Image 1 (cartoon, rainbow, N blue to C red):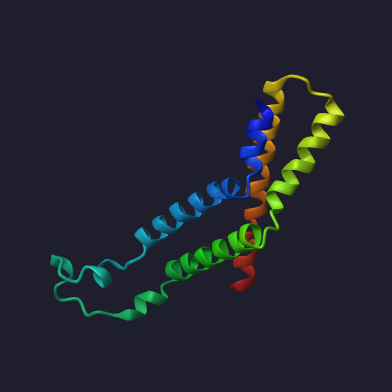
Image 2: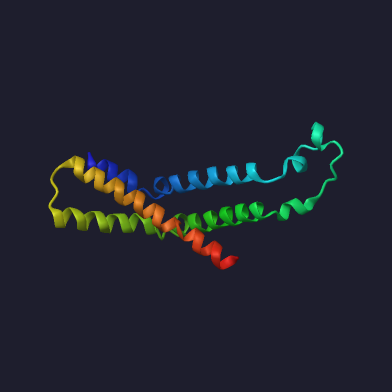
Length: 137
């Protein structure tokens, strides 16, 4: 059971789907928080006498959203298209060392450790976004 799940988790294309989903949700939420309603829906009642101002494109939340999308694209490009697979290699190494050190025979414990390693590696590899954002600002 664990070997089939390992193959799914270590799959290069399946591994990075959570990062894409989280970035997509965050991007949509950022777009909803920005004041761009009158930019896209100029026929609504409150925007009828609104002067179309493209300076809203330079709103800080729009810039953060753009950086998030670009960073996610570069992250996926580096890990999937160039096949560097940082997360998969890290999870394989940590999981094999953990199973060898603690001599785990129980499939449930192996499965829980594998999923924990996978989630932790994904989150840690992507949390560099805040450092990148700080360097850009």
